[in-house]
Image (cartoon, rainbow, N blue to C red):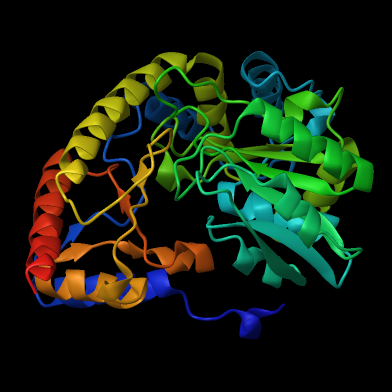
Length: 383
């Protein structure tokens, strides 16, 4: 275990300041956390409740129940065009799935390429005994495959991608995914594809799963979540679709760590995957409305520039370098305006002089938070 190698998180610095202010009774508006304010649909909750009452509270297979694995298989065939069989499916809590996959592919020492800016993948890579190597994205946050080629060495075992992206909201196109897939297939490099926000895509864009480019799962490890699609963040429900041997290795890791996941959560997850499209459609429409209102408000802050929000529920605006680094900026905004944001550098060096905002919370918080941000930046413009 390489815990000593993991540095302190810039985002946790902000979180700790938020907790400190709240402990003093101060009001803090959080635009920092990606946790939908909507509740899990009652029907899904009731399935879990009835499952517990009926006695589904004992050990089960670490692969997951047959019911949930069949639901996973049918869902990725239907919605993601991934040609999966039961042997390719594993139920595993969302964030842990990436760590388990890294442990399964690792040959110490190994390199794992991660997007810059991108989600917090460095820590699980280090824990798995690897070295995170950043690859820069194109100016519009799409993949720069030539940049990725330059970063590949004989130690490179896996490349991580995320679409729609946290924090950039970028939705990767099928042609760039195909180019990356061919490169990785040629060099026998695994791809871990984080598709946690697959259902939150706007403006008639389509989500493409890179795993659909394979005749059967082999090099692509597709990671999915129920957290955002069904507003089940606290349930820690997710799943992986990968090659048969990869699933076997990941399951071996689960057997020797968490043993298995709660059967009543798997029962509810199977129901959501089989019958939950109506919930997804409702949440997506609501998030689209929030996105549109958020963009209109953010446009009123002349000091900020931001890319189009194509998916997920984040904005990643850029500000003038003269205002200092993003960690100090986040601290000042929290101290002066009582608004919590995440510093862009937490998502990689290319995130410096940016910050991440979430519009997943209460609408009144978004409105008041943007109002306070406008006040902050307007006061700096007059300095």
